[in-house]
Length: 321
Image (cartoon, rainbow, N blue to C red; front, side, top):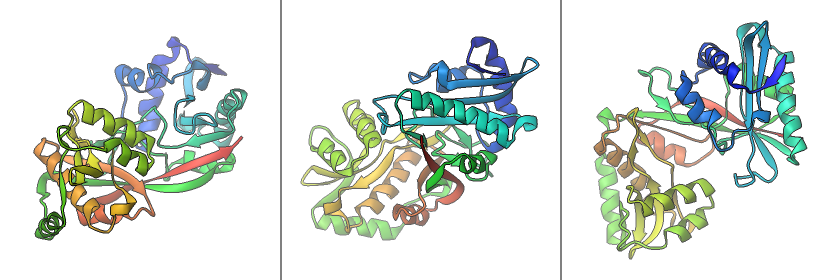
């Protein structure tokens, strides 16, 4: 039987998650985190939270979300997860749950179903080979998972691969080559430093140029609330950023992204921004950093030079409804 979410299913969903989703790589949940991430999320809709049961036991859970104000929200719905227990993890049950969510998307006028990092329900996952170091969001579907294969079978195409990368900050330091590079750009009138709202300007214009709505929302908020953000500037005009600098409760160095406007590329500003971001995160007490980037993104080379390693691969996927 497939039903929409009701409170009576809460414990069964938790049990299923901690037995099946954790095997895929997701972080273990408790009642508080399940509510925080999914059930109390402003975009939660019971019609898009499906519970499969057999003889009173929860055997499957699927969740999606929609929002007109989300990136692509006018045309797309987001698939958050489809979790099945070992006995029911087969093509039939995946198809049943996926089709129900897709029907709801279509009924709301959506033309696309997405597995994408813009999903506001951010599912944390453990980084393999570490002492439960975690990343705060899965940017797609684990390419090593059965769900990845079933999405293909149900008409989804892979748009891109996202590489999840990791660095233990314990031994991190800025090499002399980067220090020398910073001296050279300073001689040309550039600086890379922490944002100071009393002297730096045109943050919004810089972010508009980079055309990433998540960056714009978060970085502008941080600059207004005095949360540290690194900027690249020339004559105090902001032309790039990295950050924000935040040590999370799990000791991860959190940040949203890094970018430099196209007109100012070629000076090494992105590289300097990133190295100084790692340094600032370490100063703030973070013990590690993790990030994801497109497999073809040139910035991946900067991350690798700083010591980051690829630890997981995710697929961003889409189906036209």
